[in-house]
Length: 311
Image 1 (cartoon, one colour):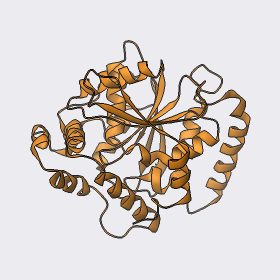
Image 2 (cartoon, helix red, strand yellow):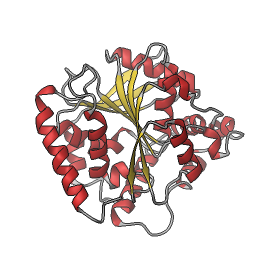
Image 3 (cartoon, helix red, strand yellow):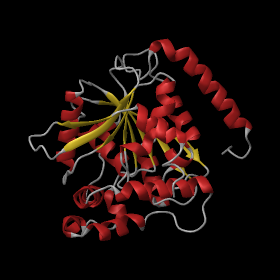
């Protein structure tokens, strides 16, 4: 249970990167929590949005690796919003507060759906330059819970946690995946009833992505081939929606590959962000580009030389 929580990497992250709390709405109970690391001179950073069960900490390995290569990375946790438009409006205000015109978004599961909805919401005055969608979806009807979406706010916390845990992997998994699940269960325990209820409401209220509004956004889709909460149909739907997207497949990784397969996920993020090097939408410090390129090549070589990891 304690593996990730007591790991040197996690402890380094917690002691080095300060957690910021920001209020941008009139309602001061709506607090955004975020880690903002890397060079502040970068005006188009990559922002990480967690799944229903996650907090801003779940991307600590991405923050660590990417800032080491010279990227500016923001990992955040959203406040209680009950409606997608309300979330999008709050997120826009947060970007205004941080003085960020455009950003790259990495969203896991619900985080990926929210990232797509935000890109769609701001399509007339675009705020999203690119998307990385990890184990994500484009239509909430796949969860067959749209009819219960309006009642989550009434449910006690233990019941909401039970609903979320029902989507976690069952049966034997490798030790790293087991550690990732334990860590996510631990994070889930820190969420309040209203935080969980609002996230499940956003996850399940009847909504879908309108792809024609975000057709100019560069997209990478990261998927796993083993058991995850997403059905094959949901994955196929994503491929259809983004026919030009880059696809990054992991043989294994379950629901939380950014925790248990972080090296591979970080490599895919690097490859995605490289296309913006040398432009005003680069998420990396220009002085670090050559070192980062070498790192990508080295990672790519070792990655492809290992037959176990070849897809």
